[in-house]
Image (cartoon, rainbow, N blue to C red; front, side):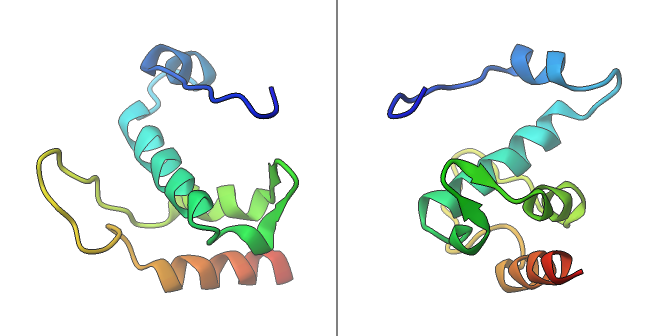
Length: 93
């Protein structure tokens, strides 16, 4: 729904994934994509409300560390520039 905030709980992620999927890892990756989108870092690959498949393909396999609750981080838990470079390469493909 345009203009409305929505959220998904763990059960929604479990239903969307296959058996044996690591839902915590999925949540971590989706959360990082939301942060990048919020700060406009995915703008080159965003068209209206849609994000290019290349972003999701890279996010699915790119090394990311799960952030721990109660710890203040000075940067994202992955190499942002390399992540963006890999998306650009995937798009150029």
